[in-house]
Image 1 (cartoon, rainbow over the protein chains, first blue to last red):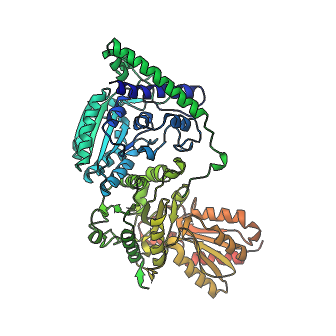
Image 2 (image 1 turned 45 degrees about the vertical axis):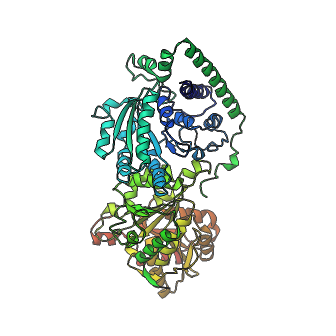
Image 3 (image 1 turned 90 degrees about the vertical axis):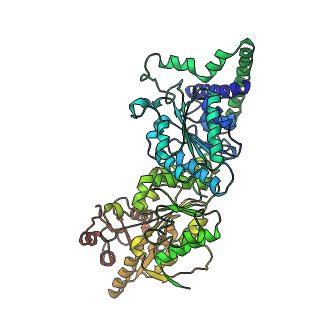
Length: 309
Length: 327
């Protein structure tokens, strides 16, 4: 449980630091944070091998961190530095790190799904035994490419696990106003694949569902759709005032988020350990920020590089 | 060296690609069991099997995205878009995803994939099966774009595209599929790029690509009868763009006609004209002229189609006017 807490805490404190760096002017542009949704990447990644692939949306910092991407390189990429990730070309919403098994975020809603399917196709054709996880939000189920990819992955029996993080807001609009079905997982049978709904704020529940899907994919039985129900503790983007959220919505989310849950269940010994972990992670984060600040900005003479081979 | 039809040369190049590149796979709509609506992939399913060539659902954006993901993770896929008009369904994957993969990663990711499509009008094709779409894609950095006009170029440019480490879009011309020509089957694979001067002349330069190349050559015959000798250039690749060949020619002739089947406004002819104006202004003896389909949608009726298309006569008339131009 201490490790799980550390993983969750690393993502949460990272996101909080990203926001403060953004507000302090060190990170340009808007950022899309995953505060409250950390249990999903932490749970799923606990069931994957290092050689498997992961793909996420622009709300994907947590997936990269759970995958083991360097915190200092992430900060540096977001700050527009010459990072080892993408040399400042991608920033917060579009970075990738293939060497870490992270196919990338995608700042076009749903667009990562078919790209993940392509990685799954590689795994299948080369018979590597790898599986691929693609995460997207509830809003993405209304983007044509997502159902298209669910069908494509189903007919090709691809080793692909679709994770829909249902935080109940399709960007800034309630998902219930955007679909007529009551759940997202009920779309799975339409594609002839299994669908599982889980409490996305419960790391173990997420891991259990992911484990089943991964086993199935590795056995060549094709994709699974997992709906992980969760809630955002923050806006769609960093400057989102969230007037669209009803009274009490955010307060309820704060009571039910994964870190608060663990703290609530902890006895005094465990609570003390959690506090120690938080302090350690805070130091780790601050060291990563310092390291990122020490990295240079990209040489402006390279701005046109890397368009072609 | 055999004489093949354009579509047979395509088929031969795809067979070569699958045979010589174990990491190449081929997919698209109706390409495996049916062998493609024009026979481009005829026989390949029997020869290579379903692990190398397979049919996808009708889902252009999903299977182009899949091609990207496969290319990022070690394969060299070829994805077929049956008509280029269907690529518009998948513009996000082409423009936002495939074209940006290398740049957005700071050069760490590569997407060695080939998209094959064919384009242009044919009798009865409606506007949704008649686009000449090259300019939409040529505006996007990161893509390599070729338009073969002969059976040999179809063969060579597909092989070049398969070996490229950049994403390549090849736009074939459906109306040229029945045309025949000698194909150099055993020649070394060329690097992508390079225009070709296909007829030498001193009086006027005619630049074209894809479907209009045969008309440009016919126009040169018409001009010869009038005592005017045209330098005819088949541009072949819009990216990488070989302006050296064009500028050299225009510097000699001082006159330039550009012809393409795509609509006039925003067509790639405008780019060639602008570059010649920038780089060869001192040599120009007359204005630069573009002969293209006017800014209308393609009708289905053949009589209306013919009324819109550029042809040898309209190209030759433009060239003749330029030769007689007085400043």
